[in-house]
Image (cartoon, rainbow, N blue to C red; front, side, top):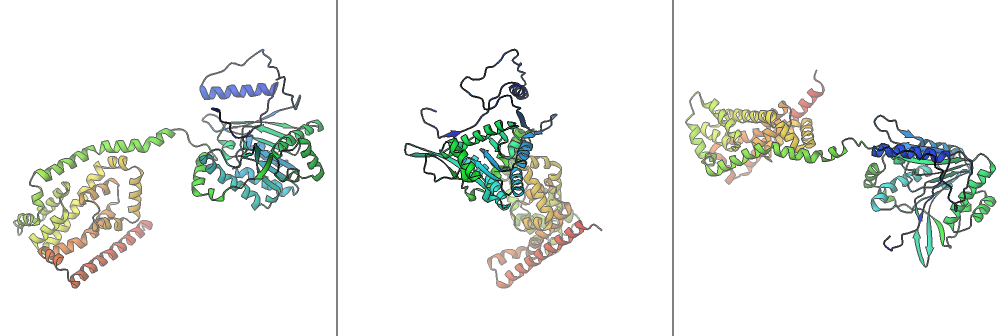
Length: 533
């Protein structure tokens, strides 16, 4: 191509006429119609002459056709190729000669190993490419070839099998011969040529067609032996008669192809690189050489589904984004930020002390603050400073829990579809992970504020985290802060500025007790879920 010689290429084809050609033409027209929805008319009343320069190897002989057709809706699958391979191998008595581009089907390897165990004198020669055509192809198919040979070695028959690749030299240069043929010769009785590789996909995924000839007399056996000798002679760089002479003298196919490799043509052992059989290689093989057809229905839709879901999620989250933008503008352009100062908030709440409206108004303030993403820590500190350790602790705890539940309900009712569309399967993984260790997970998020209080509430509701886990986890997660802020009140600043060892020890003890309580409650809840009785 483009004036550049390509490396040596080896292939084998079969030409037929008569009823076999007619059967192939019917199969080709049927395949064309199924693929293109266009019917091709049969060519009637026309005789195609046999090519003048092609001497036929067989005359007036039956031709068998074996096919692979994957399972389509409304049509059953056809696995004649696989069945024929198994039957041919199962009938072998002396020799099996194979030329094939790919060698990955473990089922065929197992059948070959079984037959060679049954017939101790059976020998097999397999000609294949040294490496495959591209990096992806080699890394996808070589692991299967390594496994194919390991199956034979594990069965104890590896010493009677040769996996070889042809090589050619000319003008001081040497190149590997690309083996593209799909040929199998069993003894001198069966000759098979076609399209099917010895790989998984040729057995059930691709559409394949092979032709097979079974010798019924000595004349036909002699022709099959001659074809085998021509092929092996080409690869070994010797005349076909020499191959037949060696085979007649030694009775061994392996001995007949043995040579010193000094000629222009030779067969060398294939030495696959075992590191190729890695997790990456097997992952490629699962896609490139599947045992069953990959589901094609909706393949493009499934491929694009994450992208579509992400865009749908972004569109559905647009109102939330707009609300967040308006909230940010409110914080920057109004006096809302001023209310976040503890002193100002404390003064406002202090006026409620001693009235019957203190508790409901404080709880309402927490709920409203949660809706506008007001810092919950500021509310807790201001409540403690205004009402003291008691009832400040009760007011702050009740307000924080009610605000959390309100945000949870908003997320569950309004945010589920948007969040699921935006996060997709991740939402389910997060939900499942928290469901297994829900209390500890929620408490940890509360203790280590990786996200704003309100956002955690919305996400928990949208992810449908169990209410019990959410409430208990929120209570445990807020407990240390509530205790410290409510107990210390306006003395918190002095602790932060003068952290004595005793004060640090108290804080660490509170945190340790909180962790132990969280883990214990999670274990109790998990046990009750496993055993409701």
